[in-house]
Amino acid sequence: MKRTFLIAFSFLLYALTSFAQSDAAYIKENYTKYEYQIPMRDGKKLFTSVYVPKDQSKKYPIMMDRTPYSVAPYGADKYKAALGPSSQFVHDGFIFVYQDVRGRWMSEGIYEEMAPELEVHKTNKDVDEGTDTYDTIDWLIKNLANNNGKVGVWGISYPGFYTTTALLSRHPALAAASPQAPIADLYRDDAFHNGAFMLVANFGFYPGFTNRQDDKPTQRRAKGFDPGTNDGYKFFLDMGSMRNSNVKYYKDTIRLWNEMMDHPDYDQHWKDRNVLLHLHDIKTPTLVTGGWYDAEDLYGAINTYKVLAKNNPNTPVYFAMGPWVHGGWARGKGDHLGDVGFGGPTGPMYRENIEFAFFSHYLKGTPLDLPKVNTFETGINQWKTYKQWPPAEAQEKNLYLLPGGKLSFNAPGGTNNDYKEFVSDPMNPVPFIEGTDFDMTREYMTADQRFAEKRPDVLTYQTDVLDKDITIAGNIWANLKVSTTGTDADWVVKVLDVYPDTATANQFTGKGINMAGYEQMVRSEAMRGKYRNSFSKPEPFVPGKVTPVNFELQDILHTFKKGHRIMVQIQSTWFPLIDRNTQQFQDIMKAKDTDFKKATHRVYSSKSNPSYLKVRVM
Image (cartoon, rainbow, N blue to C red; front, side, top):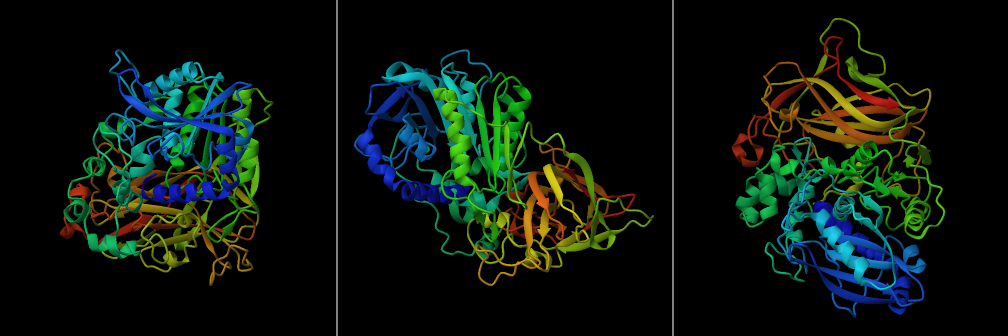
């Protein structure tokens, strides 16, 4: 979601248009568009566009997408250039429904970001996205001619969240759903990764997203934010502390931005916006889709699948993960990201053999031969299927940080309390990309990290040259033993695949990039140290005291090939991907420019204080 999603969404719209130019004429010739204001149980009406096949000689299932990003173009004579998840749906024949969610664009009501879901609905005033979906489906089934009584729902990113809430409608006509890159826990997905604020992804998003803050429907688009520069690193350094986002720019005019600034801890505001807590008693067949290189809602895709599969063992729940960025499976080839190639197109296979096959089966009764888990193994660039995720074959092992910058599956020995230390200076933070960009450029997820390794405030550990392939499948947990001279600190852990000196360029290698020794990022994550024991109740560090800091880096399916090395980099700034920690125990959202302090951090790698990554090895 967030700033990058607006860019990605614009790119997706462009791609939809360019890839669907041949479909645009077909849609106008074969579909009739209608617009409705569908009443909800509390009296509010939601604006809905419906595209119905002109051939009324047979009945059609309904495919619905509910969105906060507008169902434009508005007007019954103005058509979308593309319909459905892919072109196959258009030519196969479906009724397509697009709806502005409550409080957005042309729908009535006041918008709440990821409006809390209710377990009990006692009166018609007890509404949420689940009830809005139920009322919409009920109206569509009863009022659209020639529907076959079956509804499928899909959506990417924020619409992915609304697809998840469609499951909570539990309407008997909901026959299939596909949450794709769904936001699941707003705090963890988009706002705060383990308590570290995702600055660049959020800052520019809300001005562009906030086109209304009242209950008055509108087609007016938001103006957005113009930073006047493409150098995000310098811009955010010059902005200073997070409180200056309002002092200098937003002036307390953006309600949704202020909700984040006012809730840095995982309090009730965020707990109410964790839809995972409600995913029980689901009967609808579900396909959860995500990308290994989704910089925004990787957590949502993985955990929506895991919770659905665990809580609903008798319901068909499918999982698809490819080598994609946020929404990268929807259009395009999906054959590379930045300098890293994936051996060929991956998007068409998903769209044809997984997504379309899934919906066609559950909405039209066509045959389906689809494994429950379909995942792309990066490193060797092959699709793999499993009965569950993580695979049952994957065994937990510890990958230890050792003295001298070594990395090994063998635990440290000896009696010395070995450590490596560095000075973290918030006024000179480690950049998250090499070069300049104002946005969360998606290529950072696989980018070469040699630029970071050169800095004195980045610790590096690596294995010897691998004498065999090592495949990691499942989540990674960082288990660090650290100390700091301050009372708070961020900890960033990056897992890298180091290419051999014999590696050569491929067709996607950027100009001037040497693939020999390339340090490809495979997975990375940040942790705000004061939340190490609880995201709800932060605790200060005791200066100089060795302290455990454990956090999840999320899942991968990656093979580190023979001849490569595995590398781990650890740092305490990652700017401006995350905001800067003052390195003092305080509310960073209200900190002053003078509160930022240097601190010396240590990472221990001894028998008495081991630091390691817990991984699952095939």
